[in-house]
Length: 396
Image (cartoon, rainbow, N blue to C red; front, top):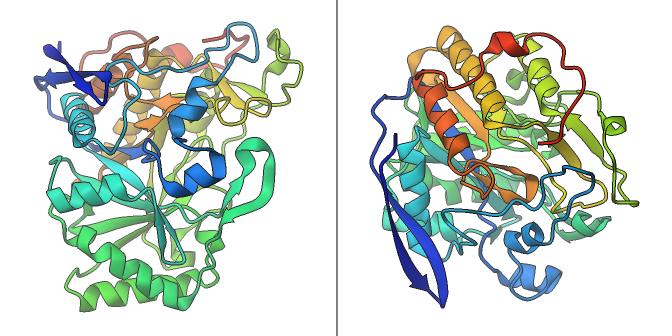
């Protein structure tokens, strides 16, 4: 078991529970990369759009249940309602990640026609060299709209992609690609694009990025497309691979009729996580290179209370079953330098998918992660127990 020593320290009048964690013994057999949301500190743009002091915690704390047994709100445990302007927070997150076999973080990179948003945590991390945890970047290249309050068509800040932007973007990324902590595939820095379909000429963009990286001493880069909406074979885009992004592209039927809905305005969907895992594992491996991804649940009721997509029965036990299977397949199909497994997510609190400890499960998702990526002894379920179709549902 992990041995932990906790010290309570005061930060800006608040209490934060920090942990010093001794590493678990077994070594991971894959590199587990968790997607990381940096929207836990105020910025002027969010102040204007959503109100002064807005952060992701604003949504999280106002979440409410939509049906009997609905687990909301998700509230943090060890790290509290942290502020990413404090370097101690990123150190504490890295300590937790290392202790439980998470190799590194994939930070979302918000870049709009030369404008950066929410860049402070990743740029401070790069400039300071701390924490000493591997990382990579995913360009979240969508427009920002007011979809959280229903005004999906009202654009707050747009992408406006262009050839000039291709060069400006990659040049801003060069210092990261040179960082010795940056995650590489066979020695090549990996760069993920969330919506390749939104780029007007994605193959031309890929060529520009590769050429500039060659000229600037980075060498070859590994371009990866997130498997979100209509993503297919990466060769079509001039890319090297795709990365799964659940719950995208898996169509598990909802089970709303099994639940006693208490919110009269609820028009969202309730999905059984157990069946979703079976459906995800039943998908055949494609001919092209794909990095598999698991999610530690999903429930975006904090962002879209009446239109939420909520997964029930998303327990650490079943998450571990899923991750174990993906680890086994990755070892079977991928060469050692390509054995990456992604996790959605480290800290998507408003979407109900987070490895960071909450007040319900504590460290259980982290413990399940460590057992799965190290092939440690199973504490609970095996895949055989979930190999048949799931019938019925229970909130959880």
